[in-house]
Image 1 (cartoon, rainbow, N blue to C red):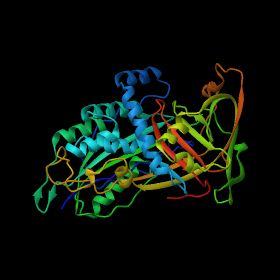
Image 2 (cartoon, rainbow, N blue to C red; image 1 turned 90 degrees about the horizontal axis):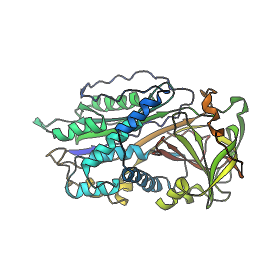
Image 3 (cartoon, rainbow, N blue to C red; image 1 turned 45 degrees about the vertical axis):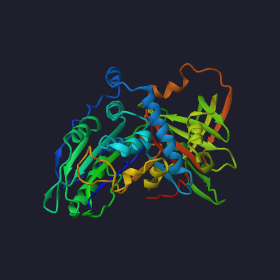
Length: 432
């Protein structure tokens, strides 16, 4: 019995403040049979071209709300019981599931669309295409590159396996998917998949796969991101200090330090939230639980996750920053999370993926791996360092973002899309 394997690899969210250098080029042993033409990179200072791209790729408010609702729903389940470092990409999971939904039918499609928050699969694909083009960034300062690939086994025991052309055409047009013809019984396919992921994520991920003769198809999504702080951290002010773990112990790590004299921040029930701006218009959001409050308590439900990322009372004033440097990875199996959110039939042998193939096909696994690293390097003083001060009002309050105990973070794009969400329980631990 052949299976459809939906394999999501959320590529390394590498916040590389030291720059976005290229790693060694991975050697793919299987050549693609079809490849998309990626959007043209736009220079960092070409604001006219950036505006034109947004105008040409309109995103409905209802779609953006659906993406954020999905992000908070899934993040609550993935992160709520965290006792180790975590980093999860809801955007990567959304793209992979949306591509799968475009080839689903009946109850299988209905369950996927309900979770994704869009009723019409054609609208979902079109909006994903617009979101892809809006987010896609490849310039001298920032990279936000989303890649998809379909690995198709076209022969089973000497018999041809056919895949629907409409599905493949949509995957290439709206999801920018690269198509590979593969033999999942051969170890070369597993090696090629790992090499493709490594190439798309600048060498930050290189997962190992085993040959699986029962497999008929894989959907792989990667996300790679890097940007620079708008207002730099001075490396001379980085100092070693104590980070207090939830078990009462402490570890020593390097803290980056600076003060924003006029900045917006938020106070909510049991938390303070503030953000560090990134040059391409996005931000890294930090949520510090109040003393005595565990990070997991703020992630216990979608409502709480929504509150800590979007709620709280707005304040304005001086923000003292002390941020630990960290570099770690995380991995997840997400089938049970999706089942808890109402996706059930996709994992059963009677699943309906008739829009992909007439052969029996169901999802056997949903996996994600991520990587994140932050430091103070690579940020140059520029006009952008003054943006926090333009139009500044009189300070009315003060916040100390002294992140010396477990905290929550998120990475958002310029349009507010949540790219990554995670928990730093121990910045001194490198977990992969």
